[in-house]
Image 1 (cartoon, one colour):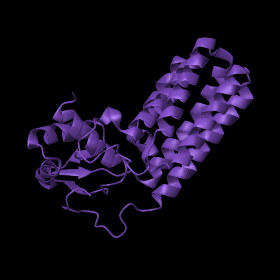
Image 2 (spheres, one colour):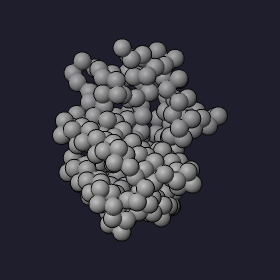
Image 3 (tube, one colour):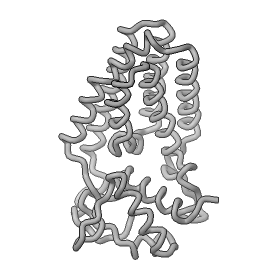
Image 4 (cartoon, one colour):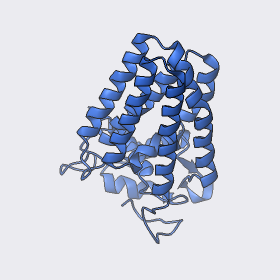
Length: 247
């Protein structure tokens, strides 16, 4: 059974990724502990892990504050991926082994099954037994994001280039990349699965140009989607520096 520490971490991380907190908002341990019906110790531990991931920052006098991503940060991350991942897909169309392509297909199938089980009425996978009824591993969106992240890492590995891997792995594990699926609708997720299928088909056909184009389309669509959702505030009119409990 997951520990209270892991459950609190998973719940806070989900809420951060889904936009429940605004950039600059203070996180008060006592408020979080009260809402989640736990002591302050697992909350403090969870916040420490989130700080290590770059999602929040301990700011002395102000306590813990939520970090934001500027439009420039987001655009730069996607532009770098657009430069590197289509190239990696092109190389993978030549270098990938049948086993590596099969692994990509398995990951995409896992993602599809997770999407098909996704309930948009319960985005966090919570139920009536309480806010920590399920662990982070049971969070439906987290499962989808896990398969998506592994798919992109596996594609980089299939390119069989240490240089490419060194450049791209960090981009794939950035919080802004990992959190992107919390902004997706079910239809958006299914479209992403279909893009993956097109990439896999190009790899099986050993078609570098098609693989490169399919990856470029996938990332361009993802960037446009993220920009669209970012321009729709999760909490219109909310103050940037709020002491309010979580919503």
